[in-house]
Image (cartoon, rainbow, N blue to C red; front, side, top):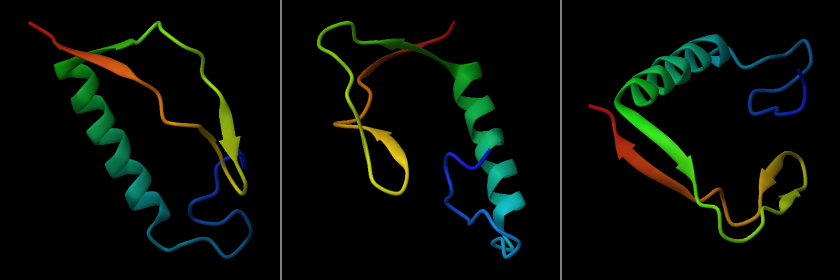
Length: 67
């Protein structure tokens, strides 16, 4: 649960955390309905991060519009 902490992880959470989480899930559902995401199979993925984990250089994807 506390692997990614954009809004804090203690008793003092951001007041907009639930709203933003719901908004992000709505946008993600819209994207997944409209697009197909395929990973680029060249190269390797390296983890990076200090306070939060992330992929070094991002995650290359190929987008295909669903019909």
